[in-house]
Image 1 (spheres, protein in one colour):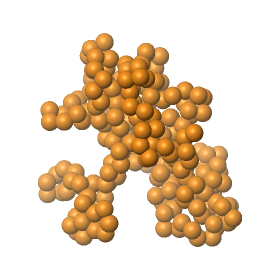
Image 2: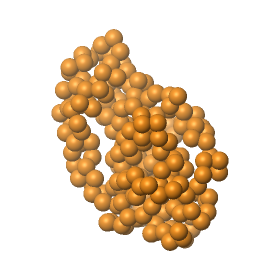
Image 3: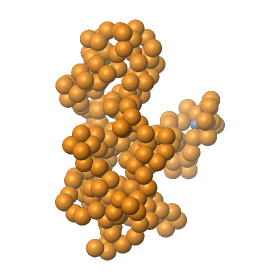
Image 4: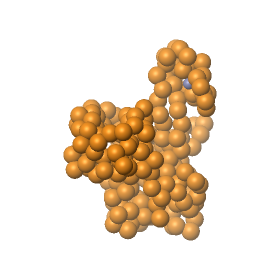
Length: 223
Ligand SMILES: [Zn+2]
């Protein structure tokens, strides 16, 4: 197989799909690189947020922040070079859900070739936005394990989110505050209509320790 439908930047290893396009991809790692960007309306493009602490010039102008999650993937079996695809928080949340399910079945998500489609996805808030969806295929891995970086290469990759980051983000101002399980459940249920109530119940249980909201519980070690 040598043909790939990914659109490739001429300047970098960045790839993307336009609406309704589908392409194959095998993830090189499942913990994405996490960056904050601003949409600069005058330049009409995303620009980096320079604030590691405090505010950058765009923060000060109240230009909205966009969280960008960049995943590495192999787009065909011709090369072990990694391409990079950027995802929104909503797409990232869906990807992590797919990966977690596979891991529960003892399948390494980086062994799988996915069919990746650019389409409308439902956010956890119940809105419809552009994003990517993943479908597992039976296609043989493009790149064998010994040629790939370790799944648990960096400190960031030692942990996985057991509660979607969208929910953690939504609750971040309440971290450490006393709250009952039922109140927490109702709070997230009222705001995340796009998610299954059974899942939301599990998340609420995970996030409470001794009647206090504890967002550190949203992450667990892979092994
Ligand atoms: Zn900023």
